[in-house]
Length: 305
Image 1: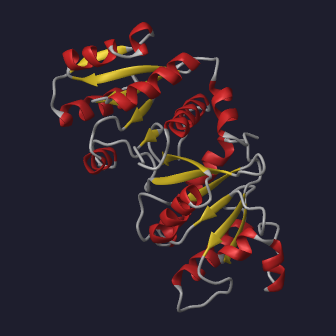
Image 2: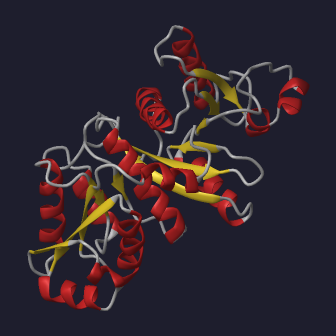
Image 3: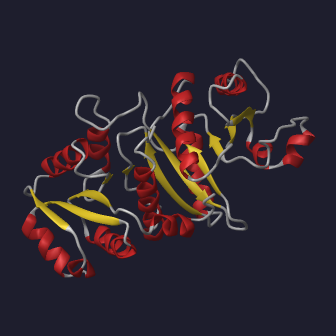
């Protein structure tokens, strides 16, 4: 099992390099690309104005490393469209946001006709590295789906379970989070959680163990769970935290990052290839781990649902 970001990067070294499409790369992107190209698992494909990119590359160590430049001019829409086309045609394995704005990037990627959707619902899984032990946990969805219903949550969970398999979690434990640990018809997320737990009991999520509803103290602490008469193998040992909506998930991950000092990365799931949006509070070191994880995903057969 991969328990740290460093092990994630080490696991990606060796083997066939993945072709990474980067529309309109900026200087910060080049610093990251130098790192992962030197590590030996990425071949960058830079898309945009050829002259501007060549000038940018000459000022960085990437100039002495293998890379490709695809000249399509200065237009951001053309650069992104070309990057997506490369991916759709199998000429690139991973897509990174690069210098494209977040809103147009996500709109194009999620476009039902010309985008990269593979499953019915795309989702984003934040990956958090514990400080005191070698363990990674997933929190989802923290970026894409604002207020998912039970049908969307089923796919969000399936997406996360696929990623958990890449990380070596053979029997992942899933805590379905709500405000309380009891089913209450006036709180819809408790009903969704109970339904997902019952679906897991009947084998709809493979070997995963899913329990909910669980509030955060029950999910995080077996002592707290026992005090509330909640007894489950998931409590205190969850691998995946399925949050009720983005208003819970994103602040939770940000708090772990800023208040808890935990390392945080992430990955868009449910697309034809790994897609890496630019999340502002993720550091360059953690972005390198994202690219390493994306490479591991491509090597597992390209199933990113």
